[in-house]
Length: 121
Image 1: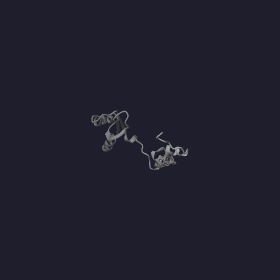
Image 2 (image 1 turned 30 degrees about the vertical axis):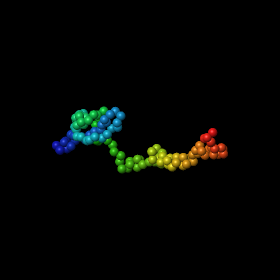
Image 3 (image 1 turned 180 degrees about the horizontal axis):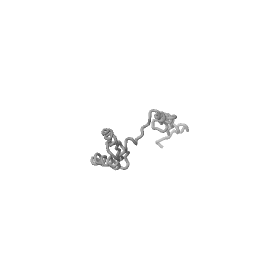
Image 4 (image 1 turned 90 degrees about the horizontal axis):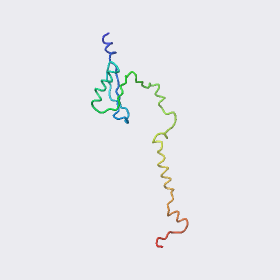
């Protein structure tokens, strides 16, 4: 009975932080604490004294929801939307090369008139 109380006394928390107001949140570490306030205090003591921090999140691990195996199917792309990613524009290099090969330069245009420029006027 005492061992069960020890197991439930401490809860697992996950700590996230960001260095500046513009950087994204990054996972840092896990810790055991008896409550939310103590978890935040422990995270500050263990982490914030080592490096500058703009924000810190301390989240109870039991509050983090993971996608189940059955729900992973919803993560698949429903249709081809490669145009939303950079690799979706890979064909443009070939298309641009083809366009450049068809470009007409000034010399070719002047040759159409049959009149060649004479630099020695």
